[in-house]
Amino acid sequence: MKRILVIGGSRYFGKSLVTRLRDAGNTVTVLNRGSSTPPPGVGRLLADRDDEAGLRTALGGRDFDVVVDQVCYTPLQAAVARRVFAGRTGRYVMTSTMEVYDPATLPAGSAPHTVPVAEESLDPTGPPLPPGESPGGASLAAAHGQAHGRAHAHAYAEGKRRAEAVFLREPPFPYVSVRSAHVLGGGRAEFTGRLAHYVERIGAGTPVDVHEAPYGTSFIHHLEMAEFLRWTAGQAFTGPVNAASHGAPDVLDLCATVAQQLGRRARHRVVEAGAEASPFSFDRAYAMDNGRAAALGFTFGRVADWLPGAVAETARATA
Image (cartoon, rainbow, N blue to C red; front, side, top):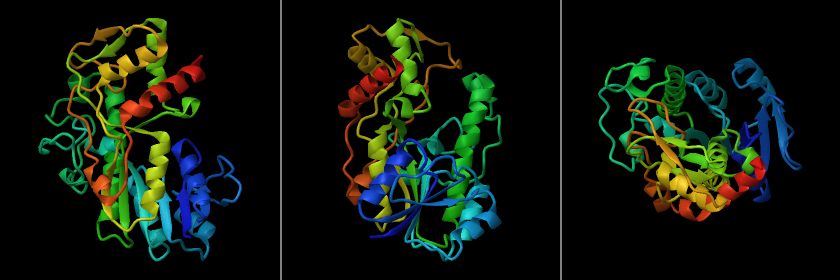
């Protein structure tokens, strides 16, 4: 039994993580700003993680065997956590993202990925990419369309990369960054609405906007992601690790699965080069290698096995 603190854990796979840790016999505490009440049998601390003094006050003299950080998005948040939890935990697990590998937001001059991309291909401590530039130096608007959307993607990816870098530089505790694939499933709980986008458009006979030659990408079911984090909390390895189900379907494969579940025909509309397409349509190589996690002992499922059920769940939620 371990004493585990989950920072965040109030929605989607974070909620499933908390209950799985509890049900495994651990003593679990959730720390957040009070946005939701934790499940029975789980402790609660109220604090704003950005307020270092307030965070220290909320923690008091507590320490933990493991901290699972679900909501670290910036290097400033990572720096606060690094200072506050030094000497308080024997293991720190940060939920990161596959967005750190996004070629469209990596620093200019970055070496091209071998796809699927493995953990060691990225050095998050490298120089940041100035907002508004693509790897080739062109503006995001010119290179990919929709400047606001690309700027947001850059900020998110760069924030996660810089947060990882803070922890990786002389970490004061054993540290893991879990780079999650695109998480799907859960019906209404899947708050991004990306799978619902396909269900609604294909169900209505509306064309899905795709690139002329879309690349595959990586996905993971929300319950598999929760289980992976639970498993990681109990392991001893450190460093970055990719979390992705087997298989890297492209947007056309995704449309075909949705269409089959709905009993409809998928219609596509090819966008011009540089224009914005539907979510999960990528004009660049963008999939992860899950070999490290598998070698460490985690058994992933296959996207092809769980995606139809996730689509059906979303269809019921949007009916």
